Every structure is written in structure tokens, then in C-alpha cells.
Image (cartoon, rainbow over all chains, first blue to last red; front, side, top):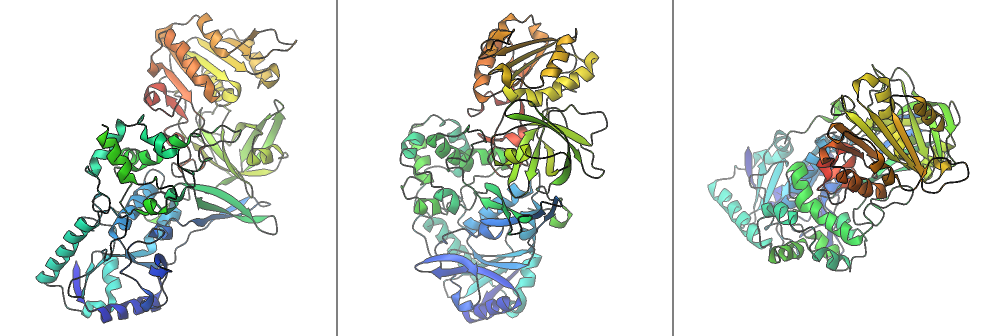
Length: 345
Length: 283
């Protein structure tokens, strides 16, 4: 739609304007790692981050959110929706791909108004990756760039000459441009420079090399249900759910009630849950429909590479590599598992 | 992708109030409840579907509807609740006139107006498996001319665990259905069969080709019952099963009830066996 060439100082100024205008969430340093958090000062913005501890999905599907307020005596329930407009700045393309998948999950069949209310008021600024994280393999999953993708409103790319190409791709993005609209239009050479960044990222974001096209995964898993790798890996699994916790496409949740001090009013909350946790499929009365650790381990991989494909046409792994980093037992590398299945096919 | 406008959407997690009108203890662990929706709410549920019952402050849980639907919808519904967890314990403590929150009905139903119509029917229920199936049985009895021969097999652990004993007695008095009961462990009062429910199957006189089977029971029961039905030459397509899973949200989002890639709360709880025979986590 509108592509602007922006100097770094101008970009910083623009970010300051955004902060003044409303809520901005963006990657910032936390120790020697990075997190998405509310941005109060443009100086704290770190578009050069490699990967954040938690994916930005938390702004749409928070670790904990109030679904409704209730009153036990009146037996009344009141929905609670979050709809404060906000800007989510600096999302990497693989995390944007994950958000687009959640968009599908929460809008299909029975649309989830709580998720969609947040999504509707968000303006998402994607930033092309500047630093390669140690476990990223988004290049293998076709999620290294936004080329041919949608869901975001603006795309910011740091070019080789130190300037930014800011690309507004939706009406919301155009509005957000604000004063950047005065910047010069990106010329052909800037667009070529961006092509170069993309080509580079496609190559670089491959710290682990998947030996097949992602589209082959559903078929490969179809044949691998009884493969020994599930039990071998699960042997070392603590069932801690860390891989679920950091995954940008995981969306399973539990629902819990909390009573206020008056013992009458309270909130019903949605909290993240994880299919690797032992009690995930347990019902009251004691029966557990997935008590076997290996079955839970396998279930997670099938949800990423097979079930998601059949349910909503996506491979639910975008190659962020967070599970690889987070796993204390060092068994959660999807690339390793999928390559092994391919070798033994 | 164009997302639906949030403001136009209902809240799929919002319960409606309902009032307890009738309560009757059936066994030491299971109690019967009849709720009426507050206000003018009409429910259009089908046999086999379930409701999510809220005890605010404690939680919400899925419970099968046991009443048969009436023509034109219902203002209330019946449940049988086993006292096994926090929410069900709180439901058991309810007094007449007290209220709960309800969402639903959810899930698939026994095809009483579809594939079951005009056919001989064989109902096989283990324990509280009778609860959802009772809805189908009574629907069939309310529209008796629409169906062929009706056989009902009921199994419980002990005579004490039998549900709806008066109703079962009234079914036994009818001449348009055949009902057989068995218990795993009998006491002195017991005058019928003893042993697992599968033992009753070979004794049935069935027109196998014209029969549709409805099964609901504890997880362990399905494999053995299905194996007996296979011996009779029953095709997978003739068999409907209701499967229990942890149906937390009821709307296909939370992930707890998945059977491999299938959401039990959406594609189930009632499945045609042919549709799930290949699902390794199903039976």
C-alpha cells in the first residue's frame, strides 16, 4: 500500500509518538534475554532482539484472563471483554504466522469473542528478524519472512544502509504511519535491499535443518504412530509442559473460578494449560485418557504436524525454536524428531 | 483472513441460570436432578447431548442429559450426577429452588430421527452409561411406532448401583421391548443374570442386518462389547457409541477432550463407530 524509507532517528520519534498516543507492547531486554512488555520509552525498544522468552500471542490469549464475573447469590454471570486499543510492535514473522493460526482456531466453528475482541483492537507491526537466535528454524518452516503472508498491519525492515523500510499493508497500518507519512517513498533499490534481507533470513533462520518440506509432515506422521522415538524421548520427559508454555501456536486452556473475599462474587478465568502435563486428559473419578507419557509426547507432535493440518489446514510449528531452548531434558527439538521419522521411514 | 466482528458475537462461555425443581437420590453415589431454565429460555436438545453445569466459585463440568426431548423444545432438562469431584459434590448439595448456571446443549446426538428410524434397536449400557442412553430410549418409546424391535441390555457392578429402578420396572412390563439386566457382583436380592454385560449379547435373537446398536458405558466396556458385536456380523456403521472425555469448554477450543485429532465435544460424544474405528485413542 504505502512504503516509506525512514531514518533511525525518525523511527525513534515515531515510536515516542505511539507511546504518547496509547498502549504499545514491544520487545525489550530482560537480563541477557528478551521479552515483550509494555513500552514506556523508545530507547527500550530492541528491534534487534533474537527471540523473546514468551511469544506475543500472550496479548491475544493471555496466560490468565477473566472470562466473566459472577454472583453466586443472584446466580448472575457477566461477560468481561478486554478492548483497549493497543499497538503490538516488533513481532517476528514466525510469531505473526502463529497469531494468524490462532486467528483461525478462535474464529472457526464457535467464534471466541474474548480472543477476537483483543485481536480486533490490536494494530500489529511486524519486524523482520535482525539477529538469529540459537534454535530458530523458521526458514525450514516457510516462516522466515512475511512474503505472501497477511495478518499484520505494518512491516518494518532494517535495510543494509541503516535505514528502515516501513510498509503499511492495511488501513490500520496506514493510520498508524502518522508522521512517517512525510518520509520519502521507498524506491526500487530499497525494495531490492529488502529482498536481500528476506533472502538472507530465509537462509540464516535455519539453525536446525528439517530434511523435508513442512507440507510432507502430515503424511509422514500418518505412518509414524508406532515409531519408537515417542517412547525413547518421553523416557526423559519431566512432563513439565515448558514446551507448551513457550509455544506460539499452543492454545489449550483450563477454566478456573476464583471467589472474592465476600464469598459471593468472583471471576471465572481462563488459564493456559498444556497437553504434556500428566492430568491434562484426566476426568473426575480418576480415569486418565492419556496417562502414558509417551502418548502425551506423541500427541503434541501430532497436534503440530498432523491434527492441525486436518482441522484448520496449517502446520502448527512455525520454527521459533523456543521449545528446543526451554526443554530441560533436551528432548523437544521438533526437527530432530521429524528428521528421525523420515530416516526410519 | 477476515475475522468476524467481535461485538456481533455471543459469548460462548456465558452460562444461563436454571433452577433445581426435582432431586432424587438414585444410588449411594448418583442423584437425579431436574432443572428448569429461568425466564423464557427454551432448549432444543437431542438424546445424547450434554450440558455444562456451573457452580460459580467452584467450577463447571459436562453432564449428559438424561431426559427425552419433547416436540417443540423444553424449558428444562434432567441430569444424573455422580458425586466424584468438586463441582459434582456441590451439585449434590443443592436444595430445591437453588440455582446453577448452564451452557448448552452441546455435542452430537444419537440419530433417533435419522439412521435409527425404522430399525431394530439394541441398547447396551454399562453403569451410568444408561444416563445419556435413557434419553434415547424414552424418545424411542415416545415414538414407538417409528422403530422396530427394541432390545435393552443393562449392566452394573452391584444391584445397589442400578439407576432408575422404577422406570426399568415399567419398561419390563411393556410387551414392545425386551430388557435384560446383569450385575458383576450379586447379593441375595438379585434374581437376574450375574457377570459381564457381553455375556448377554450372544443370547439375543437379532435380525443383525436390520439392527442399530447404541452403546455407552465405562471405557473398559467398549472393546469387549464391540468384539461380541463383530462376532454377530454387525458392521461398524450399525454401531453408535457415546464416549466420555474431559469436555471442559464444550465448544471445541480448550483441547482437553481430544481423541487424536478429533474434539469429542464437537464431533462427539456420540460417534458412529465407522468414523472412529481408525482413531487409536478412541476405544
